[in-house]
Length: 160
Image (tube, helix red, strand yellow):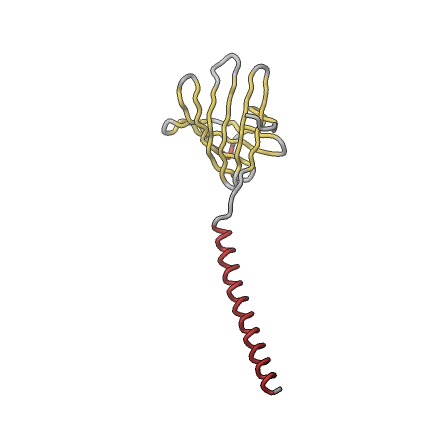
C-alpha cells in the first residue's frame, strides 16, 4: 500500500507537471497565432456605386473604400459633349475622399484632384478654385470647398 500510494503520488505529480507544460506551450502557441493574425489581418473594401442622371447626361462613381484609402472609377457620360472616363486613387479622411482622378477626354489623358463627401446614401462632389501644378489640376484649398452645388450622386446597385 505504501508502494501504491508512492506510485500514485509520482503519477499525479507527473500528470500535473505534463498539464502545466501543455498549458505553457498552448499559451505560447496562442500568442504566436494572435500576433500572426494581427500582422496578416485581411482588409476588405466597402464597395459602393453612385449615379446621377441630369437630363441626357449620366455620371457614375464606383468606390472601393478601405480604412484610410480608396480607389475606383468615375465616368462623366455627356450626351452632347466628349465623355470622360477614368479611375482614381486617394485617401479617406473620415467620410471624405481626396483623390487623384486620371481620365481620358478628347483623346488626352489628364489628372485632377477630386473630393467627395459620403453620407447616408449620397456622394457629393466638392468644388472650389483650382491651380495647375506639375501638369495636375488641384484645389487651391481643399478645406474651403463647397459641397452640394455640383454632383449629388445617389447610391445605386453596382452593375458596371
